[in-house]
Length: 221
Image (cartoon, rainbow, N blue to C red; front, side, top):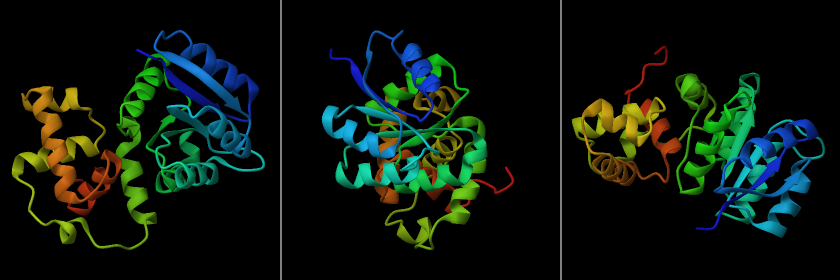
């Protein structure tokens, strides 16, 4: 199987080198290119078409939010993970709205980073579990007014589907949801596909926002 190719985007050379060192320890991951800012990231993506982009937020010339927006507009297949500190939360929310599939804190372990890359490369999305609820609350506050999730539902969610959606919104992955609800992991995957269809959304991040709109998460939870 071909390795997962990654583009590292960060204005700090030491950070880029550190990320490269961590990721190259994994036999199924490969660094396709590096970029020191958002403009260079666009050029490197066009040249290498990596499977996953690890994108810093604060960079000269073109920041990570605008770079993500341009990447996803030009290449809809682009899969971007924002790398940040939690102090950059407003930028993170903008990044998710720009098309990023999730974010990680920069103090993430090498194992967690590799697993996140694999997850996003396989078509998944992620929200850092330790701050998922705060992200959801702030993202909902910043989001432009739209129809509520309840208004969009063509068919109501069952009690089981609501329970799975709530756990998903709190940052649980399929295996964790399956363990907590005593279900097979494949069954959870099928439930989530149905939930996404009912909500009319494309990924887990959007579904998590809908969970809040539906009242499955309390703002102060």
